Image (cartoon, rainbow over the protein chains, first blue to last red):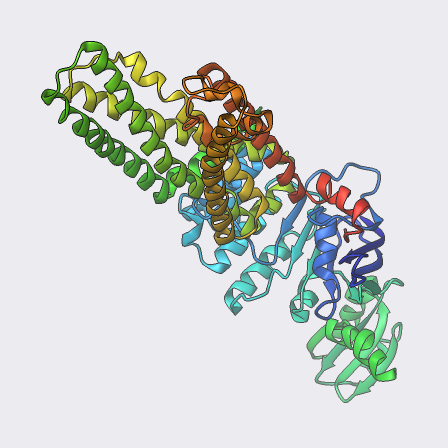
Amino acid sequence: MTVVGLTKTYGSRLTARNVHALNGASFELKRGEICGLVGPNGAGKSTLIKLIMGIEPRNEGRIIFGDENIGIIGYVPERPTFFEDLTAFQNLLYIARLDEMPGAEDLCHKALDRFGLGERKDDLVRTFSKGMKQRLAIARALISSPKLLVMDEPFSGLDPTMVMDLRGHLKGLRGTGLTILVSSHELNEIDQVCDSIVFIKDGRMVKKEGYARDDGYVKLQITVLNPSEDVMAAMSTAKIISADGGTIVIELRRSEVPATMKRIVDAGGQLIESKILQRKAEEMYADVFLRKEAGQ
Amino acid sequence: MTEFLEHLRKDVQIYRSDSLYLLFVLIVTVMAFIMSFVSTSSYVSQWPNLLTTEIEMLERQRESLDTYWLTMSNTLLILFVLISSMAMTPEKENGMVRYVLTHRTHGWMMYLSKYLVLACLAIYAVTASSLAYFLVFTAMDLPLLSAGDVFSAMVMPTLTVLAICAIGLMVSALMNKKGAAIALGVVLFLVISMSSTLVTSLAIEAAHDHPDWEPGLDEADYIPGYYKALIRMNPMSLVSGSGMIGEGEGVLIGLGMIAAYVSLGIFIFARERTEFGLLKDLGAKIGGRGR
C-alpha cells in the first residue's frame, strides 16, 4: 500500500477556522509487513486510518494498493462496536455474507474457534468483556480474508492478560502475507509485534524506520563466563563494538549468527546469554520527537 | 438482492431480540382491544334508547368506526414517531453504520431494510387494531358493517402510519444522538399535527370567503389551490382530511408521500458514506466544508 500526499482539513473556508488533520502524509507498506503507526496525540493517526478505510473523505492525495484490487480492508476500530443484541456468530455471519464469502458459516465457526470464542458463539455480544470484544473485532476484521488489516489503538484499555492474549494473536498473523497497520501508543507492544514504524506528527510522516537494518547486519550481545583469547578469536569475523568483562557486543551479518555462536562454544566459551540488540520504539520515538524538539 | 436480505435478516434479528419491540407489540394489541371496547360500548349504550332505522344505525356504526380510527391513529402515530426516530441512531451513535459501510454494501439497502421492518411493524399494528375492532364490534353489536367495510377503513390510517414512519426514519438518519432524534421526531409530529388542523381551518375560512360560495355548497370546491397543496402534503390529512381528499386520491397521495419521504431519507443517509457521499461532495463544492 502506498499513501501519497494525503491531506485532510476539517472546518470551513467561510469561517477560516480550518484544522489540518493531515498535511500531505506519504508512506509505503510492503506485503506482509506489520507496521506501527506512532505519534503524539492529535498527530493525525486516527484521521489517517479513517481515510484509508474510506470512513472520512480526503481532500487530496491517493492511496494505491499495488496493481491488484485490494478488495476488503480489515478494520479494528479503537472502540470495537457490534450489534450488541446479536450473538457473536450472527455478528460475524452478517459481515461475512455482506462480503459474499463462500462458506460463510464455516468461516465464522473457524474464526470464533481461532480466537477462543467458540464456546460463546451463541451469546449476545453485550455480555462480552472488553477483551472478548477486542478478539471478536479481530475475528470480524479477518473474516473476509483481507490483504490489509488496519487496527486503531488495539491495546488501549486492555488489562495485561488481554494484552498478552492480543499480542499472541497478532504474532500468529505474522508470515501469513497479511499487511497490518497498527496505530498505538503502547511502544513496548509495537516493539514486540511490528517490523517497522511510521512516525507521524502534525499530519505528516516524519520518518519510517524498520527494526531490521537494510544492510543485513545485526548487533549481537553475548555474555560468556570465560572471555578468553580463544573465545574472543572465535568472534574474529565479526566487528567487536564493545567488550565489558564477559559481555561482548559484536556486529555481524544476520546469516553468520549461528556459525559464530557455534565457534564460540567450540572454543570452550561458557555461553550464558545471547541476544540480538534492536533499537526500541521508545528510542526511535525519542530521536524523532523529543530530541528534535530539544534541538529546536 | 442477497445483500438487501442480509440487512433485513440482521434487522429482524435485532428487533426480535430487543424486548422493547416485543413490549410494543403487546401494548398495541392490548390497547387495540381496549379502545375497540370503549368505542363500541359507548355507541352501543346509546342506540337501544333511540328509535332508529337500519340506515341510521349503519351510519352511526360508520361514524363509530371513523372515531375509533381517529383515536387509534393518533396513538399509533405517536408510538411510531418514537420508534422510527430511534431506529437508526443507536447504530450511528456506536459507529456500526460507518463500520458496515466500509464493507461491500450500499447505504440505501441498509436504509430500505430498516424501513421495511418498521413498515411490517406498522402494518401489524394497524391490522391488529382493525381485527380487534372487528372482533369486539361483532361480539357486542348487531353488525351491519361487513368485514370488508371494517378492514377497508384501515387503508388510510395504514398509509398515514407508513408516512410517519418514513418521516421518523428520515429524522433518525439526520441525527446522530438517540435523544435528539426522538426530540426532533416529536417536535416534527406536533408541527405536522397542529399545522394540519390550522391549515384545514384556514382553508375552510378561505372557501367561505370565496364570492361564489353559499351555505350548502361543498367547501372543498372553493378552497384555494395553495391550501389544497398544503393539505395534500400533510400526512395527517389522510386520516383527518375532513372529506377534502377522496379515498382513491388519498391512496395515491399516501403512496407518493411514503416514496418522497423514504427517498429524502436515503438522500440524507447517503452522507454517512462520506467517501462517496453526495451531500458531502456538494457541501465541499458549495460551502467549502472540509473533506
